[in-house]
Length: 470
Ligand code: PMT
Image (cartoon, helix red, strand yellow):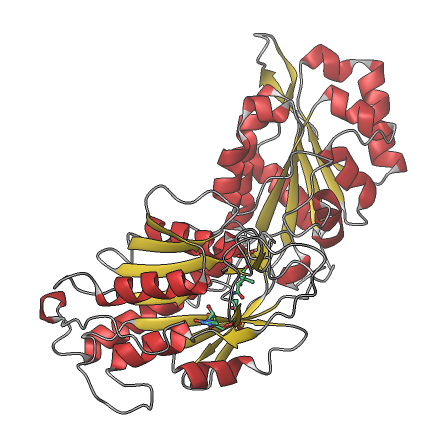
C-alpha cells in the first residue's frame, strides 16, 4: 500500500479469485493470499469442502476480508449467487493447490464444488497449480487431465516442484512457491484492463475490525416496529425485524460502547451485552426513549440516540377493551402518534414544543440519528432531518431489492446537517451500522473538541416531559 492509501504493485486494483482444493498444501494458500495482496490484489477465496477440512474458512475470511465461497448452493446475503459473482468479476482465477481429484473433475466439467463451478462460469484467465503425491501426478490419468486443462481450456499451468512430499517420499508434486504462482497470474493478465472496477458488482466485503473508538460512550438504539392495539388481540404493526438495530447495537458494543437497545417486537435474537428494554407500543417506546435520554436520577444521559425503529405514525383513537366480534361493521379512527425523535431533539436542546428555550439543555447534547424509510425516492429524507432537528438521517428505500425491512443488507444514504450526503452501496447491515457509527464517532469527537465543559461529570439532566403524550 502506498502512502496515499492506494494499492500499488503488479496486481494493483485487480480482483483475484483463489480456489483452494483438498490437499495438505492448502495451508500454503494462506501465504499465497498474502503474496497476491502484496502486489495490490484484492483476493476472494473459494474452498472445496475437503479444503475446508485442512484450513478453516475463518482464516481465509479474516485475511481476505471477503466471505469465503464454500458452498456451491449457497446464496450471498443479498441473494446473488456467490460463485457466479466471483466468476463474473475476477480478473483471474487461481486454483492452488489443485488436487488430482479436482483436475479430473475440472477436465470433465463436473461442477460439484464452488471452485469448478466458478472456473466453468468465468471468461477470466485461469491459473492452476497442482500439488499431490509424485506417483499420483505422474499417473497417465492425471497427466491427461493436466493436458486437457492446458491445451483444450487454455489454462496456465504452474508445474509442481520436486522435493520431499507429505507422504515421506521424494518426487515432483510439491505446490509451486507462491512467488512463481503470483508471476503466472501477472503474466496471464498482461495487457488486460481491470475487469470489474465497480465494488457493488464484486463479492461483498467482511466488515474490518474497528478500533474501540466508542469506549466510554453510551448509546441508545431503538429497533423493531411498534404495534398499536385495535382491541385485545389485534394491532396495527409493520414489517420491521429489528435486524438494522441489532447490527447497530452489536457494532457499537464491539467498538466499546455501553448500549441500551429499546426493542419493539423484534424477530431476531438480541445482543447479550446490551441493556434491553422490551416495548410494544409507540407510547411505551416513547417512555423508554425519554427515560434513557434523561437518565434516572442524576445519572448522565447518552452520548447518542439512534432511532432505527419503525414507529407507527397513527394509533387507533379508541382501542376496544375486549375482542371485537365479526358481524358488526367497524370504522377505525386513527390519531397521529407523537414524533419521538423530534421530541428527543427538543429535550436535548432544552426547547419546548414551540421551539422556545424553556429548560436546561442536556449537556453535552447527544448526537441524534434518525432513519427515513422511503418508498422509491429518498427526496423526503433531508426534510425529515430539518423537521426533527437531528444530526444525521439515514435514508433507505424500503422498496429496493436487498434494502429495508427484514433483509440482511441495506442500501442507505446518510444525510447530515450541513447538507452533505454519503451514498453507500448495498452492504451487509452490519457494515452499514459501522459506517453510521463512523459518522457518530466523528461527531462525538467534534462535539468534545468544541464543548469546553464536555466532561461527563458536568452533564446535567432534565426529567421526562409530558408533551405529545399519546
Ligand atoms: O428492522 P429491519 O427489518 O432491519 O428494518 C430496518 C428499517 C427499514 C425499519 C430501518 O432501516 C428504518 O428505515 N427505520 C425507520 C423507520 C421509520 O419509522 O421511518 P420514518 O421515515 O417513518 O421515520 C423517520 C424517523 O422518525 C425514524 O428514525 C423513526 O424512528 C422516527 N419516528 C417516526 C415516527 C414517530 N412517531 N416517531 C419517531 O420517532
